[in-house]
Length: 98
Image (cartoon, rainbow, N blue to C red; front, side, top):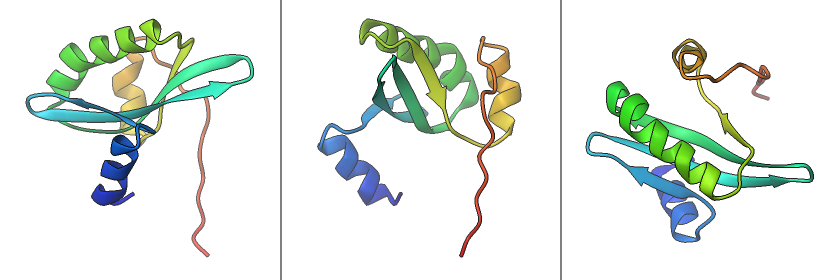
């Protein structure tokens, strides 16, 4: 996604922006047949703010929205960091450019 594409997703209400003072997170609510999940796929900024201030707020939003799960996408470094907050790795993604 380009920044313009992310902005368009937020403006069209297909994505949600959580702005912090020094950080930001973008996510979407996904509806599956047997589960509703908050998927956040863009996060950046101050790690302490993301983990100690924004993460609890986003988790509370997900619960209030009726989500059963939170799903994150990101680099491997997030696995180690988020394990400390009750998250677990559930899949591996692979990519090949053609």
